Image 1 (cartoon, rainbow, N blue to C red):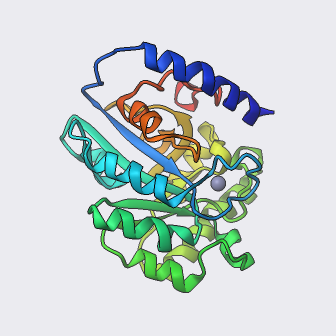
Image 2 (cartoon, rainbow, N blue to C red):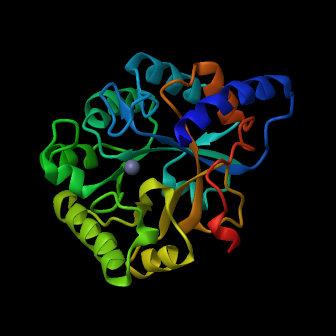
Amino acid sequence: MMRWRRIFTRGVSGTIALARCAAAPRTGFRVLMYHAVGSAAADDALGIYSMAPDLFAQQVAALADYDSASIVGLEQGLTATEPLRVAVTFDDGYRDNLYRAAPVLQKHGIPFTVFVCTGFMRQGSGNYLTPGELKELAALPGVTIGSHGATHTPLTGLDERALHDELATSKAYLEDVTGRAVTGLSYPHGAVDRRVRDAAAAAGYTIGAGSRFGSNGPSRDPLLLCRTDVLGIDSVRVFKQKLHGDWDWYRWRGADPAAS
Ligand SMILES: [Zn+2]
């Protein structure tokens, strides 16, 4: 239901975005959110969480040409002094991130973060990274691995113990496989509130990426980062509109946890 609403809203919002001629925002940290590139994403009947490889390559080329902003790693984006920054992230841990997305991003020297759900990995489905592939991905220049939980359960519905398990076991497993510290987290389903945010901080995370749409100002809590959802149906034109901020009113995920 939610997805149909998104698709419907898309038609209306595309028109509004075109009608607007606002100047590009001069400051802010925009974190792009991708999922699969070239393979089927889970629970994705409409195909919006998987992007065709050629469209992905065109979007990355447009990003590389985007002179208004610095393209930075996620962590760097929080401390960099350039007024306008953009970072690239992926959720879930699809193996196509290694084989399809990484070569394109590496060609343009664009750093990126992959948030891996360790349960998906351990399930051994063909679409998700294996431990060997994860290690290979983590070793590429400019690549950072983060956690996307252990079971992809919305963390807001869990009791204290289960919440801690999700945060701690996924982190430990990813650190074990990659041999690197894991300090970034993407909240499964974007589900985060004050309690989940504080539990993530207590478990050792310093960056938390949500699904609330938009750019991040200098006062934004690094554990409650907004992201810009890039969908498989986004043409290069829509992608540029999103980079430019024309879609930042598009906040269909409800209340902002930073406000509570
Ligand atoms: Zn996910």
